[in-house]
Length: 191
Picture 1 (cartoon, one colour):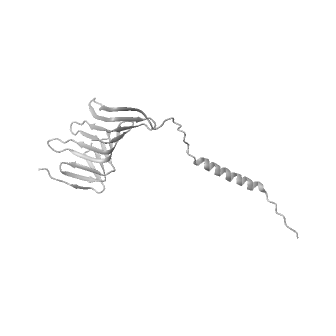
Picture 2 (picture 1 turned 30 degrees about the vertical axis):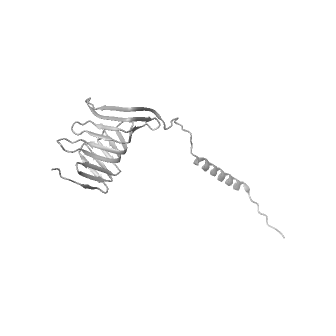
């Protein structure tokens, strides 16, 4: 019996196997999450202030806003400021507004405030008319743009009249308020 011999060159097969193993190893190494904090920061407050109270002034030197809180904590890693039991007052002599909540997040420039947990807004009215109130669980206040925004259920009251919705956008400069989603309300004419 005669046989035909086959000569197999193992070099390309070995190289292909080596490349496949190297690719598997690189993929495995690439999936590992680096746990080293390269910035050197942790999410611990770098300072805190008890009974915080700050007053902001406009370009004419008149006070226009007061922000107070039971406790203020600043975090260096993401430059956020967290306020416990915040109270913001817009000191407009014609239509003063106050906002209270369980907690808030403050932007580094102080112009954006994100109120959370039992947010209550009250805008005083004059001439014997009842105040305007707003209650929600989330409210974004832009103090420089004088806008309010919420994507959570909102209840607005004025006297016995009220309106509810799934969100709102309010612009104090143009005196416009838009309710969003499933809006319902009751209006009682003042006598």
